[in-house]
Length: 328
Ligand SMILES: [Zn+2]
Ligand SMILES: [Zn+2]
Image 1 (cartoon, helix red, strand yellow):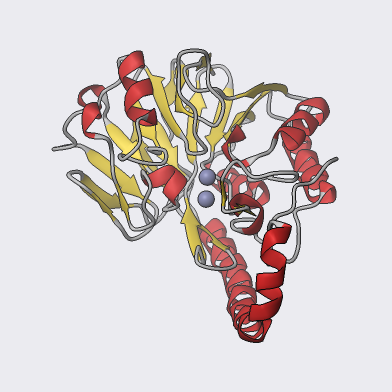
Image 2 (cartoon, rainbow, N blue to C red; image 1 turned 90 degrees about the vertical axis):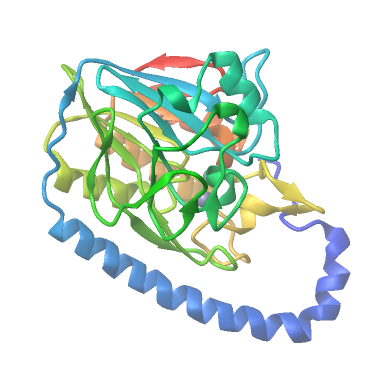
């Protein structure tokens, strides 16, 4: 396994020079991070304990169209942000809006696929990280080319605004639209500026198949998400999809020689890597949960980890690509 330096060696002398300033800041942030990590665990346990079963309608079918992903079919653009369209017999829902209204990717792919806000029942944001909200940490922005958001609902897992939408804050598990529900926000402490992160995952019951779960980045960890889903539904697990944040050897997002996803969002302090053991533990959790299908997002997971997943998962495994349609 060839690992990229998380911070380019060119930065090392600068970091050494700045260490009298950096070291105390890192110590302070680590204290905040550790405290929040324990608090997030308690908050999640309490939410799981008090969650009531969700009245999920049985959808006749579910089709997933990938609007934006790190990998793309020919003729589609890719970027390390995500946006997905879920279609059931009960409606249409967009999950996340990629990296930005200032970019062409979501607009280009959505137009090519004939997807506009006019046909969609609601937009749902997994969490307020810029690769899911349209490029901002504070609010949601959708490219104008998708049409007017007036009168449309945007479900957020945390405080924030969605420009032009009817913004609804999801505070607990609930139904969203198109027969699809939310796990409600689940917390994770992240080191550095991302800090305390609330993330919701989608959950639905597909006729004759079972439950499907779909995440954004999967920051709360699959273990916590599965525990919540077990409180919400007693149906067998059928499909598991989305991002699970495993940039082991490289990051899809880098800036000035800094591998951003390998440092931020890992659930560890920046001086600890995500290891192969972490990956194997997650794969073990997947296999124990025994879904029939797995749909992995490449946007926050490196090719090395994707190959590893595909080899070791017992489920029928797909790597998501922009422009592709999947019948779940
Ligand atoms: Zn994230
Ligand atoms: Zn992400």
